[in-house]
Length: 212
Image (cartoon, rainbow, N blue to C red; front, side, top):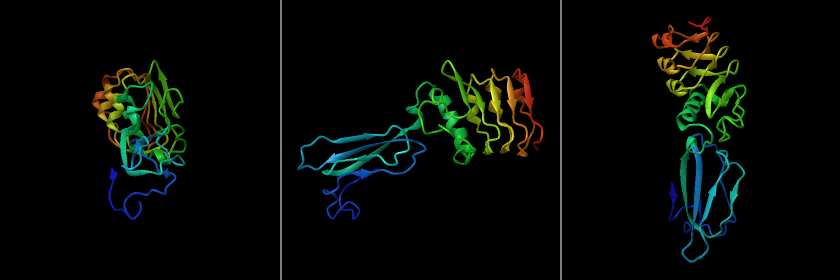
């Protein structure tokens, strides 16, 4: 997104030369904003680049009182995550977005840090740089389980019981050849039978009662 030319919000000529800073507020769930403030042609100072530490850009301000245009580039969130394969990060983000993440009882760390394994994100356990456990039971999850959860190839334990999940168990969970424990019981809005694909997974514990 780029602002150039006449704009009443930026001044009568499009250049807000008296501004001492520009403040970016908001939550960018898809990634981090990289903001470049381009200098006025009559000013020889260097351009200013802003990169935040996390997607909550809130109170961070960038000072540049000779900028004549603004360029904002969105960087995909999982391109910035450290210590976890991008495909696994994308699976976690998809789960958060599909199950009402902002309304979870406890969402500490989720989409606010770039180190889901080391911070860690609430309920996420990792080993050797891969997600091995998800413990999100009794956490007010709603919506359906996304199929991308089947990309967590090293997942061993999945606890989603006692939430308000709906829909059925995605067939993609049959890709989780390392899965040992699957608890999705007490989600009264869930429906459907156990997918055939899961019957090839050597589950030690499986709880599916109190669903539809």
